[in-house]
Image (tube, rainbow, N blue to C red; front, top):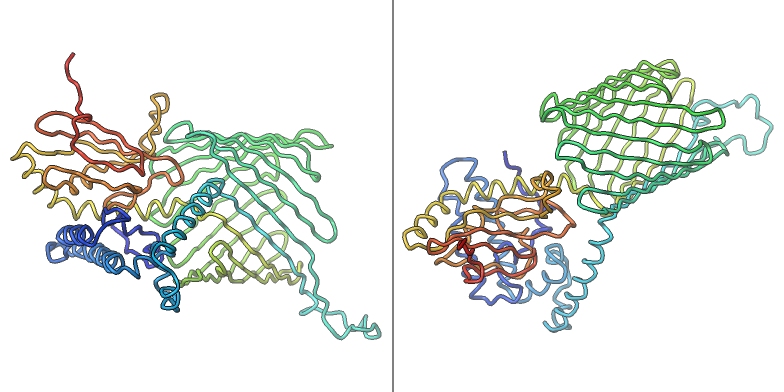
Length: 507
């Protein structure tokens, strides 16, 4: 089922691509594109409640795009600052002081900066800073032993540990990725650090392998091999083999995890670990839009425990979350509660209080900085929106094809969009390329198809299947009964039919 368009996602829409017009489009071009899409997405044309709801969302988005671009002032502001800029106060001052030429010049500068940021984002840097505060003295004091000591009337609260970690990724090829990570930790005056390098290769659409090398001052060199494989569409397995070198010799380790989707939002895990901290673990994790729930049991050396935790996700702009957990085992019992909140576009601040027997009370403050949000969720969201748009196009496409066939006109036989790979890597092609035959046929008018010089990902029925990578559009079409084929880069304009696209069938 298609998901609703959220306000935050509308900020990422390219209004020009949505209307399929040039950035220099005239008011007549905007009006023609707007009328065409209104006829396609008008809610009154659909009787099915689900399709009607999807049509209303797309119709409103098209109307919003036209309102912004049809007004010269709001269009200039949108070109520079996007949709959020239109909601800012004080634009009347800027409009009097800047000419359209100055606005365009600043827009081009910002475009170059966005391209530089896009290249930096491909490294996907992530960092975590965690601080532990010992607050046991607030709850369990030894006043009788320190009555005569100056300052003993105030509880002693101290920072007893800190952890800092950072990682970056570097795509080497379409199937190979290098990962570099490091960490520094200190606790009660003792500290150390480590650095790890991993090379991951996607072997097929069902699996990948990863080789890891690590070293640190607390532990010796580590060599590891990790394998991932999808057994069925609902089940996968991972195996991790490791050799840890230390002053006491070589310590081998083996970890195997079997996971299965129990339902749409619930995963079950079985884990067996041998060698380094041997243990058997069973857990069930349920993750929904508003909550995250975990139950786990572990039997192992040196720790055996039972864990239950719950996290509630508030549906606000700051992504506020509150959480609580109870963990009990041979080590004692620990109750932990806390909260976290998004404080900027790339940073999350969290704090939790841990009360344990016999550990005492501690406070943890964590700042998680994410230079790039995970693209997997965004791709899935855009895919669902594109599928909704394609369903709404079906009836219009049928009429367009009938009209084009009657005049021996333009018929889109097949169209693909995304990252194309060579013959040796053809197995990965499905994961990088999407079928856009229906959306392109829907744009055909009077036996012509015209795409502007912009990314195709913003077109109705399209989405970006490989964020940050070079993409192309490949089209196989028929005109006047003759096969044609063309392939263009993502930002390249396209006009068909053309004589140069004709496929020579002689011989």
